[in-house]
Image (tube, rainbow, N blue to C red):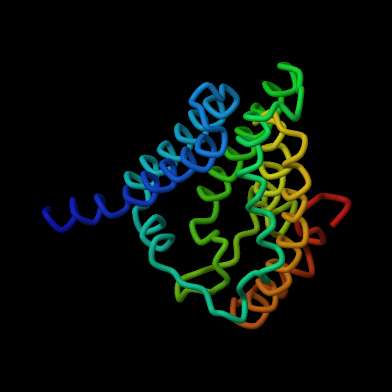
Length: 222
């Protein structure tokens, strides 16, 4: 029982650190806690993050353990130039501080709804496929999943991530941070290219699934 409680404690470290870090990169650049768009986004992000954690602690704690332990090979790591993407998390606070954007309230609210819907969709993807991860690797007991969102696109988790990234700047009231967030597109293409090479080579049954499910991320487009 003690070991089990200790294991759960370690699992909680990740969402706690993640949400604290998210608060810092939102509010420190803003220089104030009156960044109301930041509060809406951060509270929603925190609620869903801990909901995912609580759900999997009860239903599938191994999923959380895998996501805290895995490491990625250097050859599959995202090129440094794409790290411009991370400026998209910092710019909204700076934008708020210097009043660069003048985004209407309705667009902030609508964008938050879309962002949280996308995050909830990623949660659903995790429920369907507990091996879904941004780390490129195949595990011993992993199987091909072709049900739910995987019957439509081969990488639904990335679909959710792309939508979240593109609407997050607007959810935070910043037009300017859309520019670095656009780098989510080449990042996604790069990662899927390497991920599919690995899956085709190492995951039994994936070639058949690959040939039957045409689209990667966006139905009817790509």
